[in-house]
Image 1 (cartoon, rainbow, N blue to C red):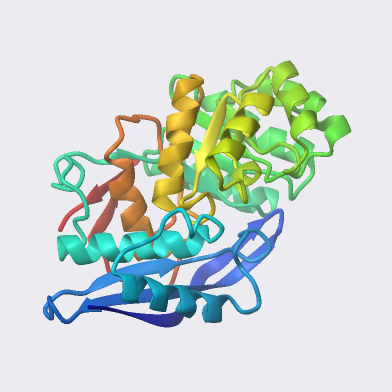
Image 2: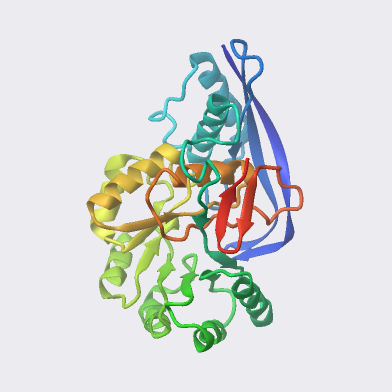
Length: 339
């Protein structure tokens, strides 16, 4: 007999985190505490972390729906993945709680990463802000040893953003520093291609979601014409059925997709995405969606089960003042698990 307790928790950012959708200073998540009469010495902790104005399952009655689903799962004793497709953040939290309960520790897998033998390469994230603020972050990431830097763009003048990237390229070639940019859908459709052409001249690795989501035909035309590889992110939100995933990939045919389990179907839903893109020779990497270390640890262990050597977007664990203590450690450009 299982029991699932829902506990809301508010995370506080060390400094405001700006995106094209607004500025975050706090982050509301819900922790799931899984216990069982059969194993009284065990506890499984999961994290449900929907993002405002982004997650497909975040509604006004989210906590009520979460408790209802948890009651059903506890009484059945298992997760009905198919039934929970419309609730990716809840599914991810449940998957994490059951994995933690089963392993009875934060070591959720049996991989070289989980054993502390290898680290996972990650990118250094540069948040939106003023020119000087973004330049300071870039210099800090390079100084700390990152060889892949992701820059969020779309908040300041595009020419200023080009200057920031030129600063990196004036000192480091693409063989020394890989640059990814994330537009979060900020480009207008009619100007997107000309902006991609300017970015491509700076040896950019890829751009995430250049135009707003849910414009499949326009995105497909942009992918076909782009001089710069395009990675889909927000485009995947709400596409929860396997046949829908196949349809999206066949229409847009992106060069990459970016997977966030809290947004894109939980771990099981992301496994489906990977199976479909690998059939189509489309690349992928995973990132966290501003979860605390509970969710981040789960994503990292899941990533370690795939032979994907691309830098992952898992460097968000140090963003919060009141994060949960989990044995994750950042050393230069790699995340390590040191249990």
